[in-house]
Every structure is written in structure tokens, then in C-alpha cells.
Image (cartoon, rainbow over all chains, first blue to last red; front, side, top):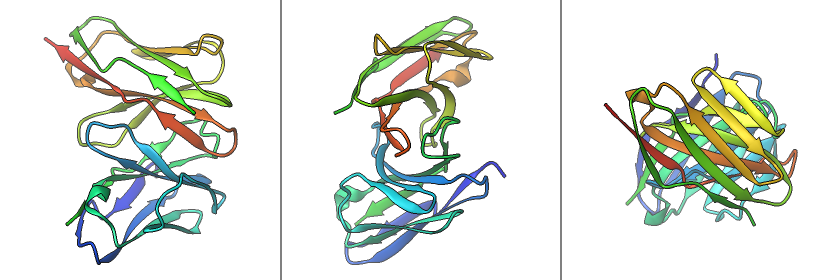
Length: 114
Length: 111
């Protein structure tokens, strides 16, 4: 298995909703990432988990809450989002946080906040 | 902070060679990635350079000069399917997993 699987592929949520994005990989990668990508912009790093511990939080608002239940799973819990949070949310993994063999990206969750 | 520059758009002809440049200014530089991203899809890994020099992988090659803060991606024998955005990304703060992407170069391959 050489893929990163993200669910759901599309999500529409209201500003008072609570939802979660899920990411799964079975490549034995020990680093996992959340990125946010707006249209025609590059991915922006949000969080890094290394060996299931949060190693980087790029000053992301607390309405985004990451969770790494085990080495294969990464969740992003969403609560009280704003319309400007609408974007493509990409999960990625790499062998380790140095990323020397590159990141494998999931196909993303396209989030719309209404 | 981190600063990465690449051209916004490039156009080339099928069968030709194109070079996409990337310059960067970053502290704690670790390595440089190139990714390809087709519209509406996730980025796919192309190359990773840590040391100076040229790395060749089929039709794609990537070059790095750490002293000049410069890299390029060379695409040979262009095909229509190579039309995509090409993202340069630098990693820094070794072991922490930090990375920053450039804005990407949109390459259009014409017949």
C-alpha cells in the first residue's frame, strides 16, 4: 500500500458544526502532516506529527484541532469554522520528519464552510 | 523567514526541453523538493536534493546549488501531460519537519 487515504473527499459544514477529517497510511511512515491549500496557492503547513507526537503547530487557530491516535492515523477536528477556512485540506506522510524520500500526499478533502 | 521565488508561468512546445528555476533564502536549510500538481489533484513528489549537483530521474532532472540558494527542474521530451503546476519547496529546521512551498510555476505544454 503506497497511498495516503483521506476521507471525506468533500465536506460542506455550517459555522456551528463540528466535523472531523481523517487520514490513513500503511506505509510505516513516522511523520504525518496537515496542509491547507487555497485555490491557485501552494500548500501551507499547519501541523506536523513525528512519531505520534505533535512537533509543529504553525500558529493555527484553535478551531482546528489535530489528533494522532496511532502511527497510521491522523485526524483534524473542526469546530466553529469561518467561511475563509474553506480550502483543500491535504494530509501527507513521510518516512520521518526529515522527509528525505519526499512526502506522499493524499487526494485531499475539499472543505466548504457556509 | 523563508523566501522562495519561482516564475509564475511558462509555456513550452511538446518534445522540447524546459527549465524551471527556483531561488530561495532560508535559515537552517535542509533540502529542496520539487512537486508536480495537476489542477484539482494532490501534489506528487518528483525529487529531493540535499547536496549540490544534478540528480537525474528519467525525463526529469533537478539541480541544487546550496551556496547560491538556487535550484532548477529540467523537463526533457515534453509531453502534453506535463502541463501542470511545479512546486519548489524547502525543508529546514532538521528533524522538525518544517517546510515551505513556493507559489508554483504553471507550465503549459503546447502541440
